[in-house]
Image (cartoon, rainbow, N blue to C red; front, side, top):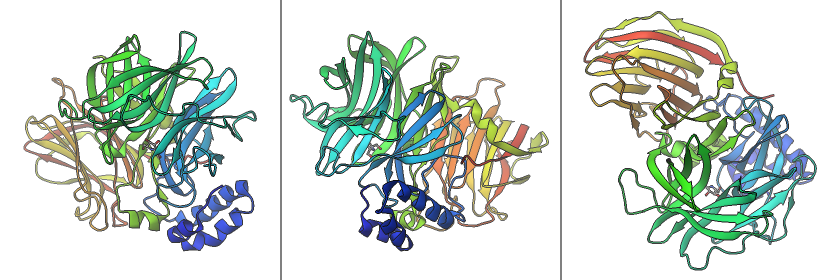
Length: 510
Ligand code: DQQ
């Protein structure tokens, strides 16, 4: 295991001794660090309890999501040396129900002098006729990215790397900005793979390859190339990271994470696939929380559901993150479905309800305009279900993580006149180096249709699912310990509350 003591010492000086001990025996390192960090982070009110995250340090993309026997495996981009993105490994966790997780030893670590010497970047897992196989991006400074492969013969405990990259270089006729991240599927007796890329002067691209043995690949051309200059209906950036591609209903779906100097958001395109090309008919942002729902990956389960995890990036300064000792959270597992109008939606998988504990509920009634109405609900790790008819003109807001005087609050507002749902973070934290911009999405309601929100609060993570159509994932860092309240505010007219229920959510660690 590669641990930079300088970085570790910078991140948490108190852990330096622990990490020195870790160098003696790699596998015990993880367990030791886990125990040390867990003690240290026990009182961290921003740390989520029912969303997946590593015991400590940095996590970004979900990788290699796969169902194997009766176990789900989730790998993830991980830096065991500190809460910052460097020298990336593949962390590993397992679950029997996609909700409760157990940490496993690190799966992949960079090999000095190997094609992944400076990082094992994102990729996927496949079942190669009974052998678990990881295809990932080997990264070497300054900018070499090469597809690599590793297999496990002991039930995914240890991994053996294929000695050389499985594709030595990108197609020579393409001037690329990046060549990384993999999704693989079977089609007509053959393996197919997409690699995320960006073609200089054109835009993001998903490059299509085929293979009979996962080790020798033929370039089939670009599945799709974006247009970096176009901003309508959605700007698709200069590089596509973490492509994911699958059939859904009569359509195919291509999901890409839009990058240009930095991550922006994730797009989902629905369209038709044939002759090695994809023709999108629709494109939309997958989640209105933009950068806080990034690099998602899906897996098809044996029961037919396609499920997805996304990475919820931090929304606070690097200095504060380093002091916290951890960074990055996974979204709840979501099911990817088609709504009745044929559009793609993501909703929490049904199993999430197993985490529901003590319930509180508010009586149905009306919210008069202009006066903040406090609810008898408190908490930082809650699920809320809110069904209401907003005023015919004006807005209805639910204040979350609100301090008793209302000065600190995260405000989720539905504006009837503009059909817009807004997650307003401007007052989420009265103090601290945190991001305070708002997220918006259009949510036109049909005649008589109520606003129906499911809201998941988990420390610094908030996930909102609106009318089974839209989601907003974001990060908030309330500064006051008493910012735990929930209140309603109608403006411009009276709102009718049909139901407001809340559950205390249980933790997910086995
Ligand atoms: N994260 C990985 C890359 C990917 C990016 C590196 C997306 O493989 O493009 O950690 O967040």
